[in-house]
Length: 225
Image (cartoon, rainbow, N blue to C red; front, side, top):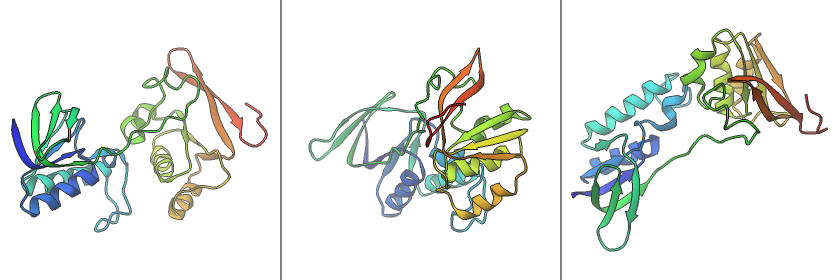
């Protein structure tokens, strides 16, 4: 059983940052990540609000964070899922799909998963036209009509990215004002192939083998189209 002073579960921005500070403090540190290091930062087409970088590709920023963390001496176990924790006693134990570890302390930095909208047909068409990562799957929809759901920074950034790939982008938001940064709003308004649909939600996703159409419901009147 490998023993560490500190084990961090999750190698997103928070987990990697914790690892850097821990190693610099002299702690023998390991990070366990079920996927690849970088977390959802790696999915961002561009990052414009990280100090030191006016603009940077999300995957590049995630790679730099990971390299920085490893340089301090942190051991990063990727593609390894934590299956059980025993937090009793002075030494904590962690079981994973590969091994068992022991540590004096554990930091849980497991981050977040993509939020589903709960529409009928969403699960059935996941990977068949329904995507949660514009930068990952955007090239698959080059020259096609796409729809983005949301009103925050993620939706705005994805819309701007897809506007350079897709023929047309419809941005659907359940309210009548965005929650994203004003800079993104101004950029979206300059895109001729972006249409904003206010006060609407997707109630159903339809198609044969892949997504072909959606049913939109007006959040104020309840009408569908």
